[in-house]
Amino acid sequence: MIFVRQSQVSLRASWLSVVFLVVRGKFKAFNMNTACIAVGVLLCTGVAVAKDNLRVAYEWREMDFQYDSPDQRWSAIERGAFNPANVIPFGLEVYRQRLFVTLPRWRNGVPASLAYLDLNDTSTKMPALRPFPSWVSHSLSDADPELVSPFRVKADRCGRLWVLDSRIAGVLEQTKLYGPAQLLIYDLHNDDLLRRHILPMSQTKQNSFFANLAIEDADCDNTYAYAADLGSPGLVVYSWRDQESWRVQHHFFHPDPLAGNFSINDIEFQWDDGLYGLALSKPESDGFSTLYFHPLSSTMEFSVKTSVLRNKTLATSGAIYRDFKILGNRGVDAQAGAQFLDAETGVLFYTLPNLNSLGCWQTSKGYNVQDRIYSNNSSFVFPSDVKVDDERRLWVLVNQMQNFIYDELYPGSINFRIYMANVKDALEHTACEATKTLPDLVGKLGEVLRTNIKLKTATDEGSKSAAAALTMSVGALLLTLFSLL
Image 1: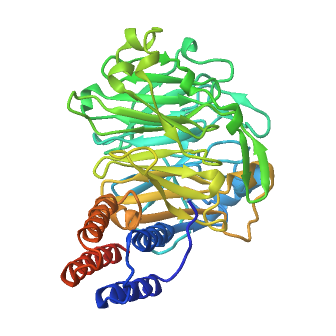
Image 2: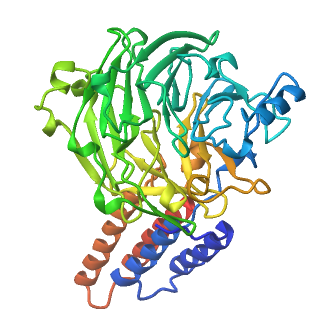
Image 3: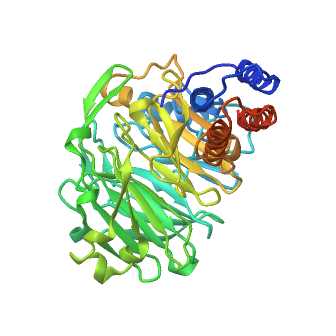
């Protein structure tokens, strides 16, 4: 779907003219064909128009950190501990008045791989980040460092921050493995480390690379974490109550060899990444959620009930194949990255890095009913993460990752942005809008057209009163459609 930016005022004015002519009876031959054409154009035009409801909340040329003093910062740069050109934001999370950002150690010179900014500080759109939970936690000089290279974090409703740490540094230089991937769970009330779960060797493979995370937190004492392994496709399930994890295998976790081509702003490359995007629905009537997922190198979306995944015996057996569902295909070049399901609206938001877009799907509708929230080939290049916070705000992190990996970032330009919008505003005038009634209106149009046929059959000359009624019905329909634009 291609969005055409044009004035809402001029669009409404043009269709108001159509409604006026219909009501005045100027369309004397307003039959099924003309009605279909008129409303069809209106529907197409309405879908094509997208409002710029996302705004830039923060932006950076290069990422920076809050050191205790300017001398300490300069010393870190001189020692090579901090190289701004090698720091890229990747994942985000918002909890109360803190916005967390992950900064994986893909190259040397990343002093802290998890940091945050204070949302109460509105003095600048380019804030320096504070390390979380402390500078000491990011030291790699220890034999067993606390934090190495986390990709995703997720705050649960119980006030805990779940951190998925790949523990792999230097993947774009000299790769160094500090141990198996780990889950770190912090208490956000005091930033203390509550628990550390290192994945057993049996649950990691030679090419394992854990890059995404979803948390099922309806019960704080019986919370489950789901970690996606894109390198050796699989899903690791962790039980907070039982303090154990297990690995789930399925063919749907694997990349599609026909969907590995990426072309982003004239940079072309191939990826063969497996399971990546994860999103959980709110608990259903049986107390379990639905996990929506997809590989990165794929245009397909899938789902599975968490009742299957949380049953260790069942999940690790070969009897679960048919419990996984195919939802549909997003279309050409629509490989999706991170995704998040907003429990209140039932809308699944997902990034489309190959299209520099943010997409949406209303999960109560068929998978073919999708839309795009935002697209921009200059300022929205490679959306990397998306979240909705407790205050109904939608957040999107954009990082130009294709340039960071295959070319270079220019410090004189804005390279990283975080967009924000109210969820309701972001969904306005899209197929995902909760109050969208176009399907009902199309049904109403059908009734009007069927009435037209009956009127023609009843009389050869036509009844003036019936024609007037028909004109008013169609006029009312167009006015209703007009109000949605």
